[in-house]
Image 1: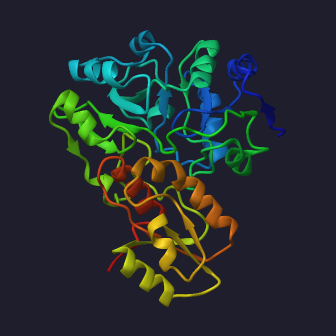
Image 2 (image 1 turned 180 degrees about the horizontal axis):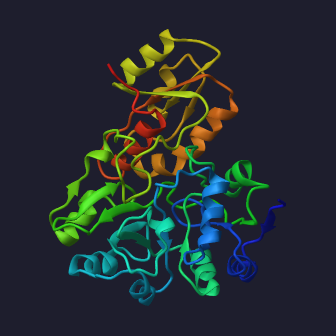
Length: 336
């Protein structure tokens, strides 16, 4: 298959491909998404095949008008309305009871559906011109670091999808926060740029699901993407190191090898004697989020066998960065 490369002004062409049952990589504010008509099961299957994505990993439906929500969900609680008023359009996904019109392939046979209203203007234009809500999981090979620019998309999916649009670098750099509203007390299933504190200020009580920090059984059924399988991983083995800058540097330096790379903070650099890539300042969690996936991909380009990643704090957006790192490491965590 030849993948058509689209400029940012070619939103009409992207929409036409989607209307004809094609799949198109499009920019959003979080990461690039691989978009298809939500109601076209054949098109949705193409996404799973192109990505190599497990069929029991549900997709997020993207809308560009609040009214589209009524096509998709069967119940719209007050807490959902409050979160929508505060955070949409933006990097927040809500899980709500679905209407029968949503194909089971989209929701992994669940009775709920994940919905988001992206703030990226190109994504909004493409959704509107397509005339239907679009599913759009990350536009990468399943399990690899999510794509935050056009080059990442092409590296993973060129020749496997109908088209890809160059919309520049993604503003956030991590996938959206996912909140389930299918229970009495809302539950955080995947952290993102909208933090637990942000959510609690709007709706009060919020449970942080155990899957945010812990590995789920592979037999478990999930209603949110990014909670079950090993995700965001480069080809190299990743070990997450929880330590002070001094202990981290001492440990990594003791492992010196040409096949080793330190994924570190700016503050660590002066103490390191090994090859490194920095993913931001120790306490600048938004910068870490923006740089993380790109840094993991750069690490792969070094063709190293092991990456020792310095663990971030879990304050604010830091919880989202930590969540991605533990999955990239396959929960291989070293505490010093």
